[in-house]
Amino acid sequence: MRIGMVGLGRMGANMARRLMRGGHEVAVTDLSAENVKKIASEGAIGSASLDDFVSKLGKPRVAWLMVPAGGPTEQTVQALAPRMQAGDILIDGGNSYFKDDVRRSKQLKEKGIHYVDVGTSGGVWGLERGYCMMIGGPKEAVQHLDPIFKTLAPGRGTIPRTPGREKMPGTAEDGYIYCGPSGAGHFVKMVHNGIEYGLMQAYAEGLDIFRNAASKELPEDYRYDLNLADIAEVWRRGSVVSSWLLDLAATALAENPTLSEYTGFVQDSGEGRWTIQAAIDEAVPADVLSAALFTRFRSRQEHTFAEKVLSAMRQKFGGHVEPVATAKKTA
Picture 1 (cartoon, rainbow, N blue to C red):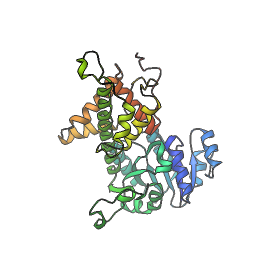
Picture 2 (cartoon, helix red, strand yellow):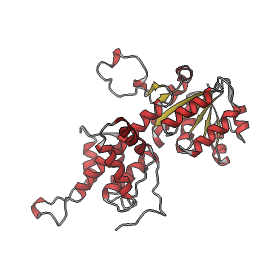
Picture 3 (spheres, rainbow, N blue to C red):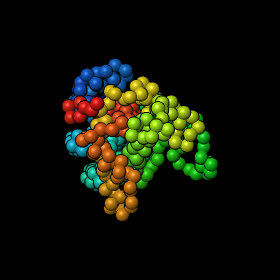
Picture 4 (cartoon, rainbow, N blue to C red):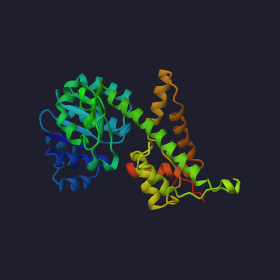
């Protein structure tokens, strides 16, 4: 299948590469001509402008957007829509707010254009590991795109099958699911990211407790000089708290047990806030998720070792770099 990729950043470029490895033809466009040139040298179909890009798509045209949520996504959708025709498909694979998806899908439906929202998880590791995808939009358009999703997804791999799952239909075991109508994909991904905040915060706080176990404020008999890198490593092996996030924390601690290259300034990309708003709208208690979000706000004022652990995990899974100019330096 031929598909277009708009945005060749950390994830967009690797998704294009994975699709090409899977035998798909990929036309690409980006604000950076250098990014286009680089991936075109690897086999992608480069383009010099948005019009040129659209002209190189097949019929029906399929364009996958991997640009920052908010203004950049809105501008790109509005720029592409007049260049597309009834039956074409626009896919937003970023972290857009699900209510924006509902609005855009209604707007594009008037022109006969299908709008598909895909919550995409996998970060900078997706090229090799594959991408977990949560999909919303018109079912017929999603079904048409199944070969694309199948290529991008991790597949079943070596993960043991959940007991009873053999009786259940669907693609969940392959790493992608159809969640429902427009907005449903990004709604599920939004809460996924909110949970991610909570998991990361739990690891970070636990490791911070270990780091301070040798505090002189404690009675001498209760002080422990613990090896955090070894603890994170042993938890990876048979522990009920093992996870990919723990793997990343263990990697960071093995590289530098003090995490001195991190200040502890922890950003949030919006999904955590939207998750808490959804919890408020639904009157659902979300104590852990809201506390994890508020801790990120606090990290921009004062930093603990826990925040350094959070920064380290964010850098490892998504390549997120702390903003040097605004981050406070601490001893």
